[in-house]
Length: 173
Picture 1 (cartoon, one colour):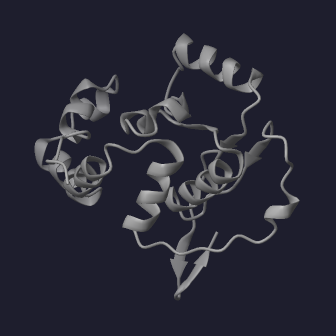
Picture 2: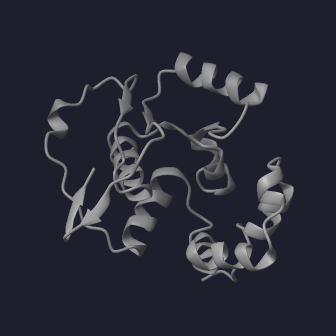
């Protein structure tokens, strides 16, 4: 097991942000965000699996989170890897993790179009075509997207929107 490295530092990210609103957040609010997102646990997990990348890393995260799932209809997926998977992600990160892992298992390699925050995860950085969901995208992001779309790799994408909520012990959109 590796010593815990600080991959994610919310305080530093907020202070480096272009957002005037974020930069004005008081330190106690930043501390609460750190607790809510479980920054220390995220950093521990990223440290524990620092030697894994891509699909192997996603598999380790699935196991770490003790997620069990079953896919029906794999035989319906095209054999050619050049395909585009767009999906709702009502449960947030977990849905994206599982679909992207499944695509990676099937085709070997993949790219995911995702919020630029995911490039902070070194084990996924080479698999992510980053998008700034809150502002203008830098030219390098646009060029990378063009490269990804021109490739023969399968692409996963989870358009930003609302996630589901639990109401009366049921998941609802």
